[in-house]
Amino acid sequence: MRTMLGVLVNPAAEGNPDFTRQNIPGISINNAKKINAHTSPRLIKSHTWFRKDISRAVYLVRDGRDVLISLYHYYITREKKDLSFSEFYKDYMNGKYGQLWHQNVESWLFKGRELLGDNLLMLTFEDLKADTRQTLTRAAEFLDLPAGSIEVEKALEASDIKRMRKIETQRRGPIENINASFYRGGKTGEWISYFDPQIEKMFMESAGNALKLAGYLQE
Image 1 (cartoon, one colour):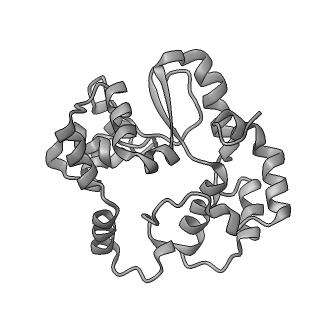
Image 2: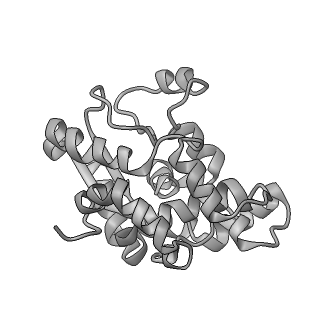
């Protein structure tokens, strides 16, 4: 999503990751000066919990079970570590990889919704994948970015996964295992092949409410 929005901000960027990071920086101590140097209104990317100083936001949420699979490959496969998914899951629940998915979702969809109201637009990763054009257009219009058919089409072309993998290969070298790529493909429902009954039970106990809030489980 950030790459596509970067192209809408400046079509000449053509999905260049360096431009995206520069113009839609992620929140971090290292990026503080860069963020403060941008004039308002500014686009900022964050994986943080909801914060009261956020006045308007697009919240892109993904099924937490698939998020864990993505995290597993990012932290384990990508780094060529020998760690099973069950071992990874235990470390994840103990906070080794930062905030837990359900805590993030609950902060945004409880307090965030309460305080922001119509200034919070929730989109799902699954909708973005199923109908990228329409979902991107919704986000762009919400953020008052150019969202005409020409601008959106250019953003879609620039962020094509094959193109992004090519850029990644140019920077990191050949990637033999597709699971080691940052651009794995965003599969939905992949968690079913990784979660054993015990992990599924533990995840539902901690994250079931968040899954309901985000619409992945019925009340």
